[in-house]
Length: 109
Image (cartoon, rainbow, N blue to C red; front, side):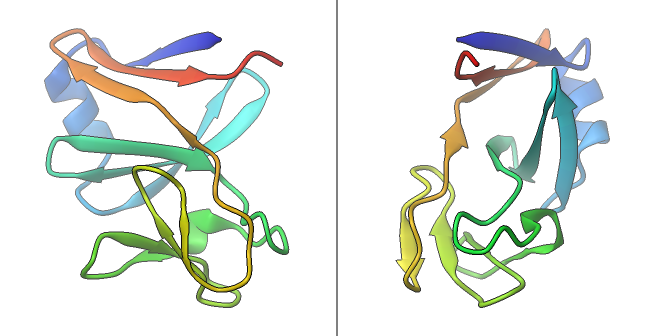
């Protein structure tokens, strides 16, 4: 496992990632998507497992699901489980917000 830290404080991270906005974040040699809902953060692979569409261009629905811009497949943010569409589940990565910033854990390469 590889761990990455964003920001130097909780306030830094909250300013860095606007509410309900998907940001592209480069960690090592991998690009991921990062989304904030309140003080909950969700990190996920940046491309849809179906056809490789950019999930950075995706959207969030009222149920808190990530929607792929290409075929409107929906993914549950906590587990990555596909909720609508014929697509493999989305790979998600653990995040933890603390007073020292946001820690994101990615699998080893």
